[in-house]
Length: 289
Image (cartoon, rainbow, N blue to C red; front, top):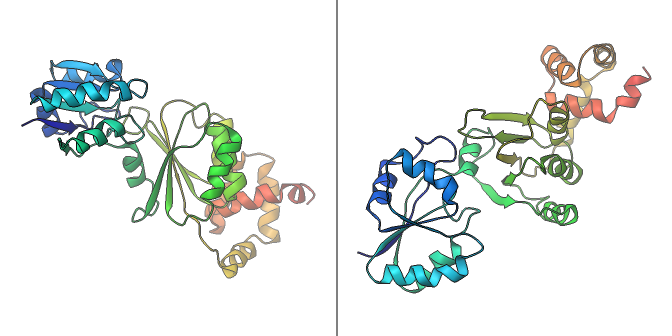
């Protein structure tokens, strides 16, 4: 029966693909790929030899009619993206929508998605979340978008490139404030996979010090908006008393900000993010002690 199969592919580890996906790719007549160079290693790894056509954002409108015609003649076609689940921040929406309009059966397969994979290991609430993909490249447009999301209570998921990650974290810090928890997931499922958690300001410090590399694919998980209770702020402020402040002043002479936050936070049972924010906000005052 003629069909269009939506087939997820690995986002890093070539073994992160289902047996069903492999079988489908071996059975279809044609595979529409976003990027041949990115997909060939997967096909070669599983010894899949099929006719391939490139379907990307530049040619999707032009090619869709031809592909719909091929399927309508009884052929089976699979669509795959460069990595992960097709259509999730990748081409294919127009193609799939036209297949549905022509009453062609569209069969989705479950599989890898970097946004969901990163969320599952982030420690953030995952019962309600908002996927936003890539933020606009221009700073003004990016700030405008973040302002629209400022009071969004669900966990926020963004993709970002290494070249723009510093600018994006600075925008998040400026618009959301520097109290929200942010998880920077880099190279998920790959050899150099890493997860770093802290405020946007804290992550900026780590990047500037080279402790987070500006390389690879990045997923940002941002804590949703919360109305903080005044007594919680007061309780934290009361913990950072004059003795703790003197300790901070002394340790900052010899250790990095990260080191001081870790040591004092653990020793005095103070939330590390709150302690970091306190130091950043009151650095001049601490220097005068």
